[in-house]
Image (cartoon, rainbow, N blue to C red; front, side, top):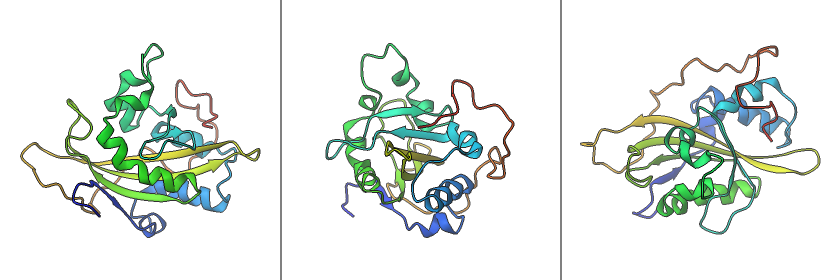
Length: 201
């Protein structure tokens, strides 16, 4: 890993063991059991507020275009203006180039159908007004039965660092746990999240 990088790939065993989180464990299990094919599942609809969906191609060293950003995603939280209908730029254009280049490798792996898990220490790479954070990211490529593909990105905000914390290292913050606001045992019957039609592809 080069000195300039801020992304550390992680073993998928973190997901398989449950260490990466319940949401990550559920979507990875769904992806694996269905061989990457997206099927109708009310639990996936329940998960959609935390999902960022992209197309399945991108220029080398860049991130793919976003097609959906759930209301609880870090992108929606820190770049809400990027998703406004009258925005003059593509949503990913709001991400600084240094960040896009740094996280592109994970997408390149996902495009080929390989699952990808990493941890990021963003520093100032997301621009003014966005804090220094530690993020965990899981990327999975899903296709429909007709071959229509999307990359599902599930980012978990692990820590927001105070300005005085000047270290630029990623750690495995195993003591962070997701809030119990999503459960894989969700049953059909509850309405989908607002602004979402239930079809996350």
